[in-house]
Image (tube, rainbow, N blue to C red; front, side):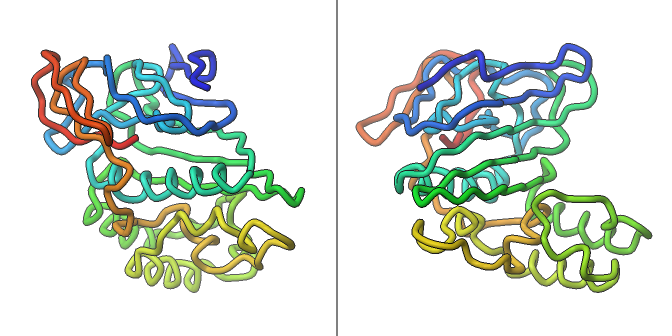
Length: 250
């Protein structure tokens, strides 16, 4: 159920956060906030928490998000969350568009921290973080970061293998994982929702900074720039909003 109390904007940093339970809803892009000067040409109005997962269409949840991220890695995570919910899991989620500047500015990073409670009673913590950049720029950033000392030494709650590898080995494996661009939605399907969760694999361990293009567009809604513009499975409508052309995911 959509509830605006779960979404907030930090008045000091501008960070936009959703913190609360996820729920299965019909994707709704009506009355979306207009684009602002903070949007770059390749940005779309992306939901910090998808409207099909209980996210609201307000500035406390809709931000400037690069289209590659909106339709790639972020969409893949949302697909995994919906799959888990459809199979009887419950998810407590904290998602943040990290601005670290002023309210309304363009986010630099998106983070997802999900606590998934599966029907058999076991719980998993799933963590992802993504640069708000295109796929090519994210790969370039990862290559540069891999050459910096101590870049990969910070703790990560979703990384089960980092402690057993040196920084050089970790960086090499990160690069190989980025190149393969795995489907992040697989993180939400341990043991096919029954029994003991599978052992942590390299996809789960290093997806926190990965880049994903294997996401598809079956869960996307076309938004033609109008605040009341909306396109769902049953049809499409366009309003008279900001006039920008974008395709925003659920």
